[in-house]
Length: 458
Ligand code: FAD
Ligand code: AMP
Image (tube, rainbow, N blue to C red; front, side, top):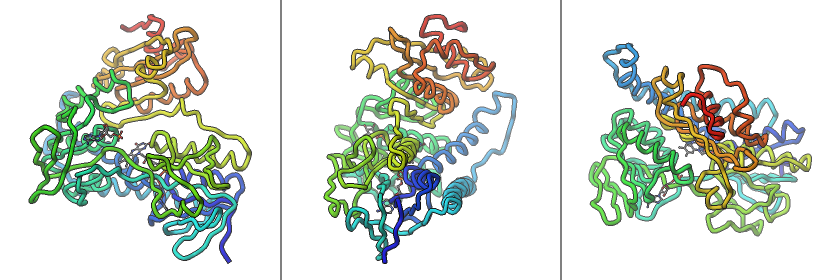
């Protein structure tokens, strides 16, 4: 007899494992199928967590080499032990995958190891074993998008997964794509001593983020040593001898020793048996769902990177919670206007809500307040004065519509603005809120004052 559960979740990434936890919390009998031996998905194993561990570590190395002396802290004999740095990163990952496993045990979630495939609605097969459930949530995530002509070999021409585990610092790394993942990995290896060239098809970096701040970010990153080749389309990349070559439309090829392909990610649906459900994906390979995350097949749902929307861990988790709550209680939703996005370069870039470009395109009248970190006391003390906070509010109602930050700890600062948008706050609400001194958050306060042209410290 097939094992049976109230809900089975396929995939234990931040979408799937959070959905499983919430379902168990609501009293359901839950099973979760994961094909990898560790839980946590792309995010925990080969994404958000290991990249942030290496970003923190490489930043410390950079600071020891280039920043500490300016504070009167003289260090000598600074050297890199990359094997140890990688071990530390691996330990951070293990603590997180282990943490998810602990939570699964605590919530009595049945864990199935293997690749799940649908046999019929409510019926799946894992490694020869049949499982049944009243509801099945597909949370199979995404994998690296291929690029025609780029021959991945796992060593010289690689994806982020291998670039997170290089055993030696590349001499010259070429990164294809100036999105979040490309720039984060470029930063890590540049700080550790690699020459890094970022080749981007568009004439700007960080597509989708505020253009003005992206331009400022490019200048700051270029000062740090990243070389940008914008408006350059990669047409091929492959191993060549003991190095690699990257071909660019209309330009000389670049010879280097490693290439990272980072032009986006595509949803994981192969081998999932969607045909057994009569389900089709859209033209970008995503599973179409309605506002309750229902697919066209009864009692089959989908969340996270495998459906439309920003490919972000917290978006996947929010959808996991909302999907389960809709199943159990009939309500629960995600506010897609209040999903932050953070790029963990140094300084960080963070955003929530609309960009100026979007507001202009949709004809929404807005007022803008901007405040530079160069005028913030705490940023000066940190020696991190690049960047600014930019706030966009409706010209008539003053409601905050978007916020964009380039600067130290931008990823933490954006939380206040996410809450502001979630609560429907006005820029005046933030302007009238007391912010501790001296903090970086005072730059958010001043940007809110600046919307009404009454910033005090500039
Ligand atoms: P995933 O995390 O991809 O999980 C899906 C899981 O399903 C996987 O474990 C997979 O093995 C499993 N699976 C797939 N098919 C099957 C099957 N048929 N049967 C069983 N199991 C299956 N996002 C952020 O928000 N912040 C960041 O800082 C960030 N940094 C990133 C850095 C890198 C290098 C990368 C690659 C991604 C990063 N992301 C970041 C994106 C983030 O990792 C994803 O948005 C997130 O993991 C999506 O969650 P998910 O649950 O939808 O899918
Ligand atoms: P993201 O999807 O945010 O990870 O960003 C991927 C980046 O890769 C985008 O900025 C794309 O414009 C860029 N890109 C896509 N195709 C190419 C290409 N052939 N050559 C260079 N850059 C590319």
